[in-house]
Length: 199
Image (cartoon, rainbow, N blue to C red; front, side, top):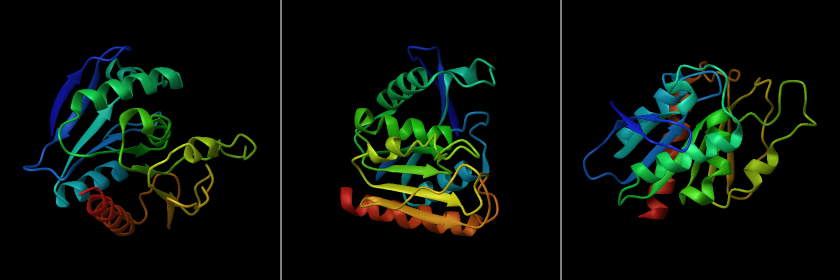
């Protein structure tokens, strides 16, 4: 993957781009709050996208590029994400997503990016042990199809299914490391549906 620095209102972000010939779409994925773009579930999703003739960009938020561990406030993450997607956009439809915090960013900005769908890996429905602090509103605000791949024992909760929102439960927890074949199958099937419907 070729790293590309992209200016945002909050400093440079870095996109690791795997461009395919004649892409059917572009899938832009963000990392979790304390993690990076080498998280196993992000890498697995990216591999499936390339197999489906979809270009992929794994995006490092500016705070990570600057070497900080603590995530930036939500409004800064969202503004940086919008700038990155805008810079990467080509002729093909755009799909957005990410793991954990990155999935939240993709949901909050789905309308702004014009995403044709949102892929959520381990969406953190609420902080562990705090179900009253739900983030369901971020999911419910998305008006395009959403796939959530969630570990059955994820301490961040299990998002509910809804019209246009599919939830695939896999063995394991928030890391989504226990069932790579299940993750591959879920992402591949969803991508094929989205690509067929947006063609």
